[in-house]
Image (cartoon, rainbow, N blue to C red):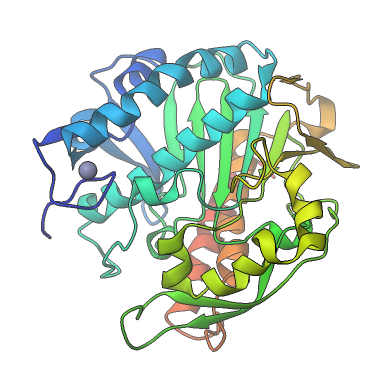
Length: 366
Ligand SMILES: [Zn+2]
């Protein structure tokens, strides 16, 4: 595999090394010279381990610098969550950006670490995904005195094919991140494609063509459907895809235009549902509670950290099992027409995840 920059995908300029899991996070979670555990090899039931230094990817110096600012802003946010403190809407959006960065960074890193077992040619990189696609973040408080850092779901075959969902344990919090094309748009009231087709030929071969957009103009609860286990925080952000490059590659530019200036009726719905200046791609955050979903249009508003207690509190193994199950669900929901998850190779790919989920659940004593 030719060397590429983890951020922009081009040949790295003034080559630098990017630690996909940053040094500050490693220091925050234990001895920085230790090995990092990443998921489980479910055949021998042992954690997959890497030395931290192997978790690096080439990057351009400029790309690296561009993102080092984000790292600096995430540390106090993680600390606040470890202390069960409130965090502003604005900072949760930054945290979601960071989770996009880590998710895509680990996906690219695993191509290298595992020798690209699915034979995929990565067609996007960190810069193409930070804040560009519908996304979800859950923060679970876990009862533990043991520090530690562990990523879950990043070694699965579903994730290799589509890095749509992963879990990240940082000391006493467990973060779940989901992101994919228009995965929440329908239930969030945003424009969504009613057709997903696989493009097998031509310039955009291997991509999905999304077509026949519709819009329901109301938020359906729960936006993440079905619901995950109750978390202290659950946030969904629908994102309009108006980027010309993404639009062109997926055939959405024409259809999306109708929602951005041509149809004034639709405009009046979307305008107050994006952050100022309106018509930015990023939709207003939706906070999902167990019985309702509320929108958070004020970027300065503080989102309080809810306690989850008693029967509603889950062991970490159960939360991890969910990550593998949601990978399957999201994968199925975005599968293009003609792709049957009951046929190989997809059947085997999904069964692998079901087996991993079952293993974690067994270990969690459920
Ligand atoms: Zn670069």
